[in-house]
Amino acid sequence: MKSDLLKYTLRLGDNALILGQRLGEWCGHGPVLEQDIALTNICLDQLGQARLLMQYAAELKGGEATEDTMAFFRDETEYLNALLVEQENGDWAKTIVRQFLFDTYNYFFYTALLKSSDQRLTEIAQKAMKEITYHAQWSAEWVIRLGDGTEESHQRAQKALHELWEWTGELFIMDQLDAAMIEAGIGVDLNSIKEQWDQKVNQVLDIATLERPEDAWMQTGGKQGEHSELLGYLLAEMQHLPRMHPEATW
Image (cartoon, rainbow, N blue to C red; front, top):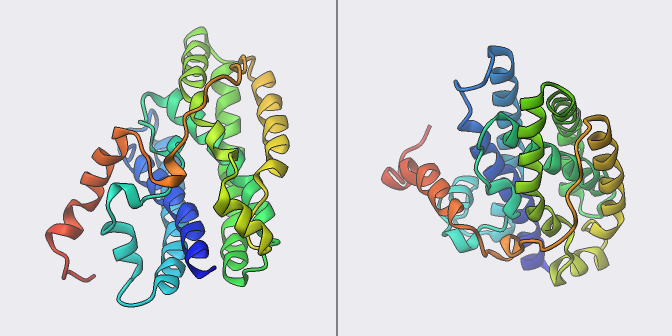
């Protein structure tokens, strides 16, 4: 059970870590100063949540593990994040749509995680909920602004939605680890939040005058350590400094 809890915690921590790293690429490149700062703050929120989860994962693993070794000294196949969060930023519309699709999922997931029987995960969820709620509201408002904006912003948002949709199905696929965590009263039933996610996404897309893509083929594997080539490039940049100076401390 301890090894299962470790993997489950890493899934959550890796989602936050990898998305935070992606959003960090926008720092200094936002379309306007206000939104540059907003996205950078969301990036910091994600990294803060990742720290809490990596600290817990390190404790579960034991030995000489620390939050830094868990974040920077694992190989690509040891990362268990969903494929959606490792996708490239693209333009502003693609970043916003990716954020909206994940934020909406994250909001309902962490709302359910508040009821976990694992006290540490519950505490992390309680601490993160205010940030996660803001993220979901912010990205939804931007999807509406882009979709119901100019002809170009609408086209870019619609294009991003079609490009990213195939990565959303994995968020709700239940595997043996999910089943074990639910049986233990620790994890979240992904089937139970899928309906909530569908309802919220449909509502926002309708206001934004955007067409929801059909649920066809969905990409999977990230939660089992099978990733797109994009993650390797991301990790090479993220891990470069810690691996060059493994003994460095702040």
